[in-house]
Length: 172
Ligand SMILES: [Zn+2]
Image (tube, rainbow, N blue to C red; front, side):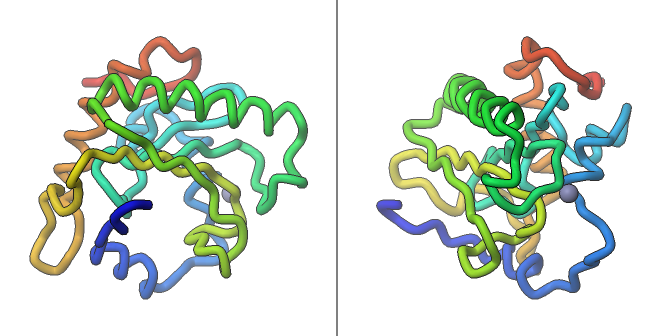
């Protein structure tokens, strides 16, 4: 990254208590109806899902998550692996269109020491970048990204992903 993004609201996640008995990604790929909107899932395809990161590094930070709860690439079936990277490409194309990103950081953090927040369920990050970006997300005083802002972003991105076959919440 040319300029590291400063995202203090992520401290809430980093320092917050973790419930090891639940996996938010498994819950997201299994979600139905309104729950998909509440979890800010754009689409659940046959093998993966695309959702907004609740603790974004930048506006419209998306995640591509396989259904399979596996921590590493080598544990993933060849079919899941191929489907995930194919969906990363489809996501990058739509993200550029939707938000006019000038660049996108695409990557995985495999393992806790590599910086993975949710190390047990592998996922790919897509962080759109603009020249001179940083700090244009509305943030609450106690450094949360405003939930209303994440909802608005979900609504803005939703139509751009409507052509991908899968399960989704209506725009409503
Ligand atoms: Zn999981």
